[in-house]
Image (cartoon, rainbow, N blue to C red; front, top):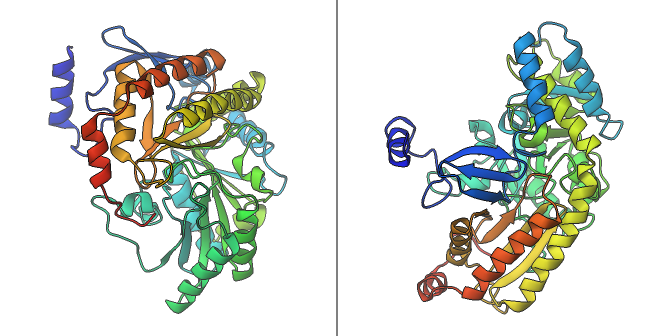
Length: 440
């Protein structure tokens, strides 16, 4: 079927706000490692699809899922050695306090379930604290915990029970005091007649602009939240499983142990799977008489997908690769930062990197039109990037973990040519007229 026919069918039969990524949508038909191919045979370097954590169509993961589907695929109400062994292997990667798993279908569902657990663990408390710019998923409960969504088009704004800690901005030197931010959120909840039951924070704020939290930030926040009786949830949906390089779980960089950790995207290398990892006392609080059941989260194929993905991460030493390649790529991006006035900041950890595009280095004013121009120009050169952040001006790099130095060099070569071409006058003018809807 040709491109126009596929696009026409999509527009006719798929909801109109089910977005496509680029101005000219890509018709992808095949993937391998960190490369994708479109229907015309064009090859693309994938620098952004962190869902395929160990690489598109990894043969060991694909074979494990196919074998299980050909043998048995049923739900978790039956004993199955695969799921039990996977739960044991997965929890073994965490600090010993985090030893109990619940399986779900996605990161959104994981964050939704974490909220239910927090309500049981903190009876009578109904308010929630979150980070500015956060995204925790697409269910109604977690959309309310996602400024990335509720402050944007179609959003309903902040709900009265939700209290926002301003997102730290090390680039501009703003909002770096975790204790101050936590105390303010707690005070706001009290003033509204409530108490905070849960504090959510992505260990690296991805949709918030690839923000690396200041050293000790979460320790300060956790101390205040625990004193309030709140449950602390670490969202590792995008940043977990070794992507951050120095640690298998990004929260470890902060030297803290969360009460609950939520997992998604990379856990099954694209198979619909997520997990909630909790300390036993919180599992006990949640076990209040109402059964927990998820047809597909704990199905036998999910266990096979999760175990195969975890084994590949460990056998191929992807965490060490993420650290090595991340250091290499970040150094090359910082060289571009020195050369080009509109490359304001380069930040990241491992293979989770953000390049903030600004009007100029003195003003540090976000330049979303320039960032989009870079993304679209790069895709025309067959390199896939994305743009994110509260002001849509951060080019994000989160490739499959098979990404190595050769791919980093390819990315840098193409990006250098795009930056050397400069920005069109219309793009520069649009950014100078643009005003952020939320304060910097």
